[in-house]
Amino acid sequence: MSIYIKGKLLKCYQKPIVMDRETNQPKAPDYAVQLLSEINVKNSTDTKHELMDIKIKPESVNDYKSKVGKDIEICCSTFSKSPIYISEI
Image 1 (tube, rainbow, N blue to C red):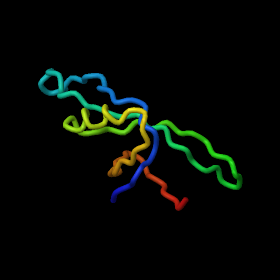
Image 2: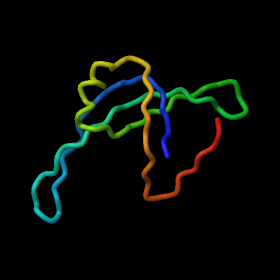
Image 3: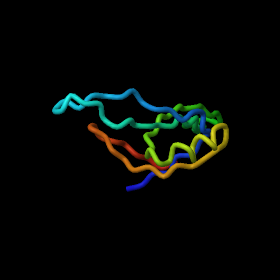
């Protein structure tokens, strides 16, 4: 399943490096972007802002860095250790 997330790209960053438990060697770095999305508030005409950190592929880092400050849309897959609740907006 894919979900499209729209928002203003605030930052592209490298996550802290973690160590592999088995080899005790550092793993390859992970990267993420921060998106600021505007969401409609239920039963109101107001909106609220939500900051989301989204993991990206290392080869996409330069593409996203060139889009900082712009409104973008990212196609994401879902992954969670707990249930995800999805509703129509």
